[in-house]
Length: 90
Image (cartoon, rainbow, N blue to C red; front, side, top):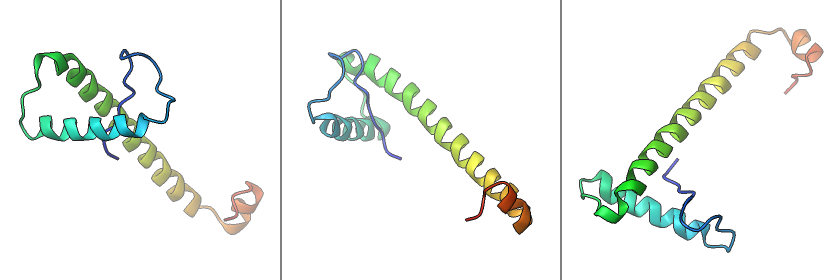
């Protein structure tokens, strides 16, 4: 999944319908900085926090994908009767 930004610390929650615009801007700026553009002084703190947030989000997404894969593997090992008893009929 692409970059997102909560824009925390920049005036609170943005429930004004602009959050998609902020996310799009964050993705654009993120792509520029990842390609080697040096962040200006005003954005260095934001960039550092953004990278940390992205790393946490990516780790969570990978963990969730592993969990889903392991769950599917475990369910595949069950007999049809065991799946029915566990209410896992799909």
